[in-house]
Image 1: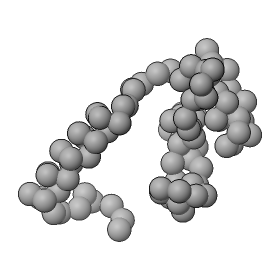
Image 2: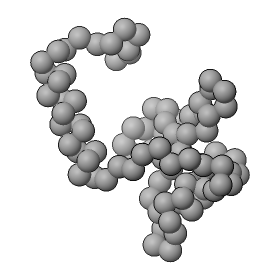
Image 3: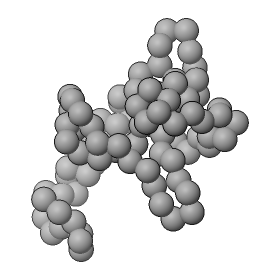
Length: 92
């Protein structure tokens, strides 16, 4: 997942298909068998936004695996059940 940030603005794209269709998100996808995660981020940014970025301008901030993502979702789900209040400004 790649987010383009300029000062206090973040460029997002609308998801056109699959999970999250119609929602805004960063750019990204799965690495092809012959590329690194960084190379995949550069390629996906070009394919999805038509913006060419250089790998040396990207900064890795996090790495998610399916196990850690699942664990994080489960933790949030448990917290949501205990506290159903929505944060200020959140939309349904």
